[in-house]
Image (cartoon, one colour):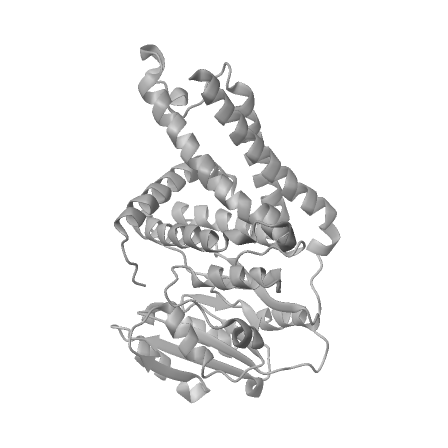
Length: 396
């Protein structure tokens, strides 16, 4: 059995080192491009439609709308659409209070986020469509920064730099580090046309994308990922910005955080399984790296969990309750793969944080992320399996 454990640990270590090396090579290859963002040529102001699906978002919707109204863009060329998806609080009243500012408000029976987005799409008249989560807010120059990418005719979508404001809350700061990691990875993947998601907070699309591919998948748990995978399957180009800031309000407690991540994980597994056919050289790096890595990462997690359980129950009695043994780590035969895995994680975090120096992430929160994230993963992956077995439905 020890030989099998060693083999699995070396496989996990290889995946960790391979992934980090791949991204580091991307960073070194595209370093100049990483720091460069295109500039919008003067006088180009196509009509933009911003669609905000909202369900019980009265607490945040006002700030979201206010920042959109303050965008540095001609007022007559931007259309802001709120779709109240059958809210039971006063979301509709908050939205209606902005009609005097030109905001267009629709109310419909509750049907989910994807249905609300499609409802807005059917009524949008812009050449470009931006989706916007009601619990997020933009900076004045965000729209122009994203629009500049569309000066390249092949670009069909651009994702914004979704971040979290510093709060001092350990739960939120953990997510803040994670968001920076995701943003860093997505930017690097954009250089090889392998972006796997266009996040809800202010991703922008050419309107014709939806005419050619159809609207959002209304039954999908993470419709913003599904539309990006659908675009990749059609070889559409997606770019990512690290300066077009959009700030989102994260969960502030473990219960809500797990609920959000379980939804993301359930939807992600389903979406990648749906698009598993893209594991093919004709889909470039997206098919040869991103999609296989998703499945490999999930498999590696459950292998590690299995190793932990095995070690806990079958290790010699005198080591059974030693903390490091219960994690499936030992200082003898498994030291080398374990060390490589840890070093890879540290190197990865270093590159991420050094790329966002202005964010001034405190060391203690990086350490919280480093040591706590495994347990968060354990929680949402196990809950994901449990809820998938029970086929539980999700309601936003």
